[in-house]
Amino acid sequence: MPELSLQTSPIDYIVLGEGEETILEFLEALEAGKRDFSSIRGLAFRENGEVRRTPPRPRIREVDRLPWPAWDLFDPKAYHDNGLVIGLDAGMTMPILATRGCPYACTYCSSSTMWTRRWYPRDPVDVVDEIEHYHKKYGATNFPFQDLTAILKKDWVVTFCKELLKRNLRITWQFPSGTRCEVIDEEVADLLARTGGRSLAFAPESGSARTRKLIGKQMTEEALMKAVRASVGKGLNITCFFVIGFPHDTWADLRETFRMVRKLAVAGIDDVAVGFFFPIPGTRLYDELVRKGRIRPTDEFLYTPIFANDEKIRPENNYCENLSARRLTLAKYLILLNFYPLSFLTHPWRVFTILWNVLRGKETRKLETYLNDLKRKIRLWFRARGKTGPDKAPAPGK
Image (cartoon, rainbow, N blue to C red; front, side):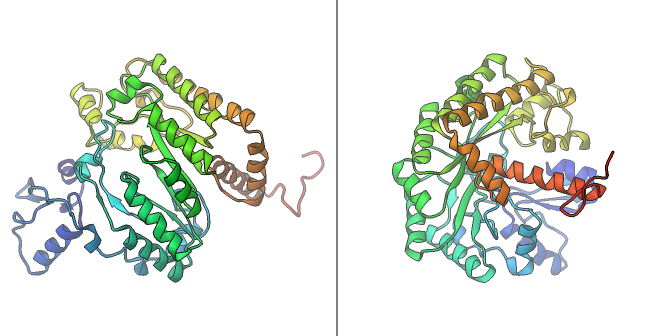
């Protein structure tokens, strides 16, 4: 939303899309004293009170020629020490980006606006070079991949894993943001497990085939369950992401999600995560809701996506035409109740593993992350009030 950003804030220039080439060209022109930026592609700016936008810059195809992130200008350890990392806490963490873009066009996702529908992977050997460099220089042992769609081609992930095996790096790596399930078979799952890639997430979004079709989610339940069986069989930690409250969702669609999470619980995945739908600028669903007059791009509205994972959804943030905020909140907890009790009943040893890991502060699944965070909050609550602690018990009668 570059036009709105320029109109409502004291920003002079905005780089659109991939920024590596545009920012260099722009800063060189600025340094040379130029004031005509119309020839620089991928730029938005104000000129004579009007917002101008130059043609988009073509996507960078040769992603391997881009340098690795300049982490020497930051303190990577500070991010890890303060818990500012995505994924499971499995030691000193450094983020990795191995691919750019996504060929799919889900109606709730703004990826195609940012990256177009082209997917460009880096050389898997170069990615391993980067991981090994961070391992040696920063002592990093955990690498969450930030890719939109990392596992898209089987030969890429197989080459990547075999390169990791060749170097015998003692690391873990994760896909906490979700990835495609279609290429996860017995061979790939085995390679993931052997190389430390033990945690990944699939994003079916809904158990309803109707909903998946309407949101452009090109994934079948058969492909998901095949990937789940292969992954669980190799001891991988699997989370599935679900979103409820799409504009067209009905209670019948949500019942299909209840059914799917029960199926996933019996199959042995570790966690489910449930979020409420919020329209994101640059998506087809956002444009439809704007045309219908359901939303206006105000600052207040643009804050709403941060509430997607709240305990409940407020009526003013509900964009579902068929279900109230109260019913959507109920559905969120019904999904969890359909999953976790059945998961523990069919895999009873998991309860003891989770409790033991939480006692040690270890994280191998999202539920342990939640419980460890809850444990820290409780400890801080008691410390703040000074009522109790390891050396101080509550006074009698208080």
